[in-house]
Image 1 (cartoon, one colour):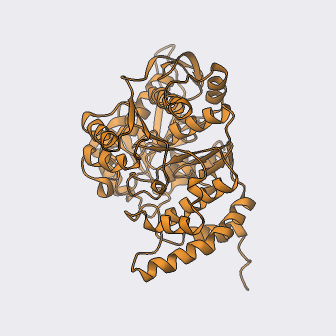
Image 2 (cartoon, rainbow, N blue to C red):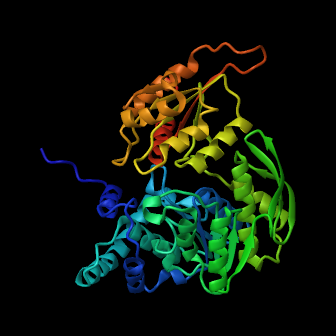
Image 3 (cartoon, rainbow, N blue to C red):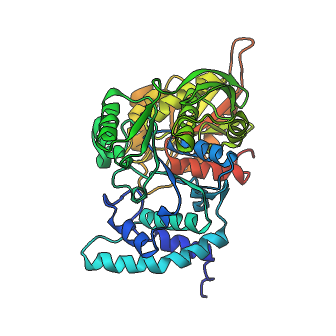
Length: 458
């Protein structure tokens, strides 16, 4: 019996992801540049705000896009990675691209990619990667929309990331720390040097507070390119913040204006920092840091800002939290956000980590807010063997707090049962248990899918 024909969107995904994946990027721009040249350089059709860093890139990108959209600009947003659906990564005016349009544009772009492939093969270059193809597709879609401004998140690094074929008017840096060390460098300085490659001659730079060695690299790159640079705590800052239900109230001193009592619907001090960076980036883009954002625009933009998978309450009964933290710096921000915004009688973590990550550092970062760990497998070929990961967790917190369940669905069931067990707590203290899923973006994508389809509270 013959198989039913695949849906067009599944054919697209097979064609797009049938190449070298995003976890093994080529350190080059030639493949992306050649395809875009054949398409008439669509990335030059609109100005770009380009964002890199180690943590906070996606949240900051989404906040920037939301404020620019509230300002009346037609926006294109390109982020990495998705949480289960490719469409999430290519967003026009706040809406993920629809399947029909994605398929149509892919079919338009594909012949040019194939022609570029032949040119590369003739030159002895490795075939294009899936991310190179996706970058070309996103830039072409945005030009066709058309958009007024593109908000583009780097996939990995900066200098040789395929998004860097574009000439960003504003280069934005979220906090830089150790991650992807096998590709970006073994030190914070080396990683910052690679990321600083998105700074273009005579343009503008906005940076979050950085470690001294990272800031030195950004300052050096800005000087070499004769670019202006605005830095958190010098040119803009968070003046204060108050946690609130579902978010926080934040006071920000921007480059051009002071904004008090901003309602930010995102949790954690790191999201207040991301908000300040985003505001400074928008001020820089709209008026070179000399034009304040109107309060009406800022309130609307922040009200519309979302950051799925970042300290998100995904389900109830019991509470299910998900967070995309996948390195120690991100895990530390997660732990701080939990301490500030939640109080549970017991918190059970479902954790899976990819093989190139600092699992021990991540566990140490959350050890004092998590009561029990259920170690499982992420839906990725790069997932760490659960027994090997469990050994790392046991070394950090002790065997009495660790359970191993390789199957993710059963791991969630086990964590849910543990969270629902009665807890003896002092009178007046919360007794409700909760589950936290973290450690891998692929894990979070699957957990969110389970929560959306009703597979949590049963």
